[in-house]
Image (tube, rainbow, N blue to C red; front, side):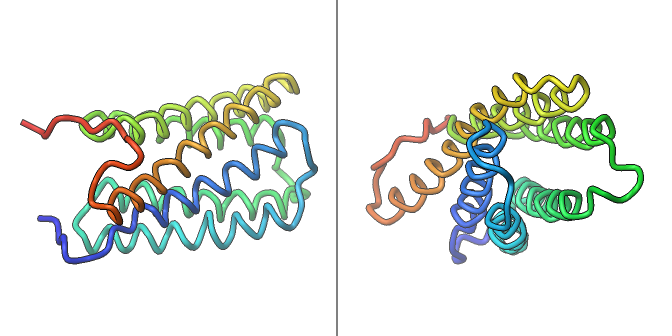
Length: 188
């Protein structure tokens, strides 16, 4: 049973995910080298803020939200750890591809969980599992063109999460659909 007396934590989680994803994928698209700004966003906004949003979803009784936000928050924390300590033995590009593939597999199944949710969240998860698998293909093949394509696709994914976060905030603030999110009919 969902507790509706609590604030909606989804915009916090979506913004943490979206902004961090856009910034990392500006790097993946080849515009900037990876630096402390992306790593800091990964730890604090992509990581910790999403874990907090996941805990808040737990309090609301939302299993999908707690699983998504907590998992992706911990993804960002592990990714930053991997980047910072990539010189440790056993950290090859092909093994990184398996890490990205497994996150893509998780996201693929989470995408099915969006089928009774709004179209905007469906798009976020669809574009995210495609992003993970493009990045895995990049690391398995060493093909930088695939990495560049993944970067642009990741920017779109992140922007879609930012859009959904702002739609939820504005729609709640105004009490009407200011930004459409493609509501699905209620579950049977």
